[in-house]
Amino acid sequence: MDPTKILVVEDDEESRRILVLRLQWMGKFTVREATTGQEALDWIARDRPDVVLLDLKLPVMDGLEVARRVRTMPAPLSQLPIIAVTAHVMAWNKDTALAAGCDEYITKPIVDPGEIGDKVERLLSHGRPTRPAGEVLTGQGRGSS
Image (tube, rainbow, N blue to C red):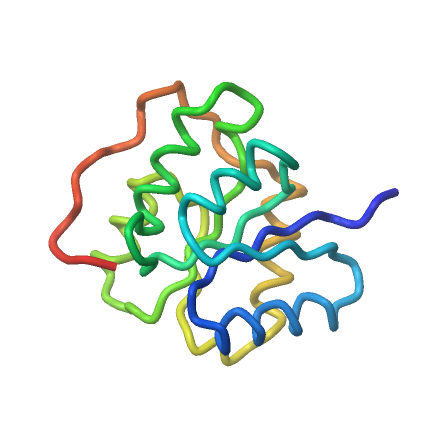
């Protein structure tokens, strides 16, 4: 069985390096990296990952917009599991991320490295809830990510 392909989308070099190293340390993932929302969308269309770890605060196109755009892609891309990764810990930030199409939510700094693996495994084993195209909410919520 091929290793799980994970796309890490993070513009901050140090945060991206930490995520990538933690995933590589687990030994069961092939990790790709993107630093912008557009680069993430290009990777997804070119070489579909199994899971996306998506920073919500990206320049130009934020992670919420990336998630919304993924959800409007044709299946199976529209069903790609997305884990939001952000420093924002307020409940409405999580609700906004989930409404935009993210399936899970992890806050930075990531204190428990096992949390990443646990959420990836859960999404891969149980799948993500199927949503009809266009069902994702388009509101920005009460704040930015």
